[in-house]
Length: 276
Image 1 (spheres, rainbow, N blue to C red):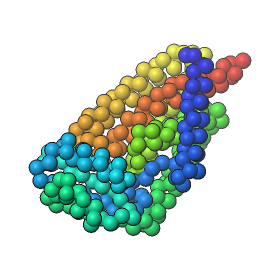
Image 2 (cartoon, rainbow, N blue to C red):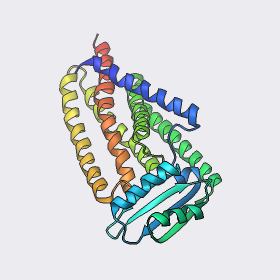
Image 3 (cartoon, rainbow, N blue to C red):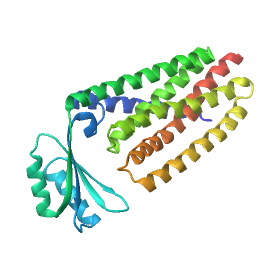
Image 4 (spheres, rainbow, N blue to C red):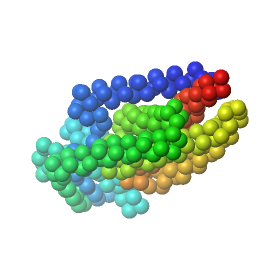
């Protein structure tokens, strides 16, 4: 294992923190929020005899001209158009859409911004509480500062870098993606405990224990990713399960270098000093 690779993980973490901080300062929040977390109107529209390409072209036009968030949802029955908007005349918007493609039916859901703000605060507190609780449990279980710190740092890195990549890939924070972020902590700690437990068993043979843990850990991660990719392909990204699967796939990829390079390097240096 090349210890110098740890600098790549640290640099990526710093870049991610810098990006999230800049977005927080410039926009007021470190990631784009879905309509259920920022409030506004959600319009779900079905059309008569409209092809997927026609609905996609309409979606692109609405995003460009009306500056609204729009996306398509495809099922076995039909393709629908969902439009997230606030501060505009929804009745006029419906009329303009109908001029382009004939609307079969539509539904407007109004979400109170105050209620959304309360939900968002609960989400933030939940993530912080979960992270702190996991950190405390890790320190209680291992009772050694450096290995415990390495696991907490890895979990923190997984969350921060996953949020950064969600921004880059335009994945918004929603109830579904929040659930995935909580699961990220579980996946991260799971692989970190596997690695730490294995290498602490044998102080004299780090490489052997590391390779054994790496084989098991990568098998777990790849198996999980295959299942999540299947869910994403079957349900589509626009579904709740698709959004959850997308974030988990990102986090599993992010966790690989953070666990098997960053965490492993810290443990290797720690054990080397113990042997002296």
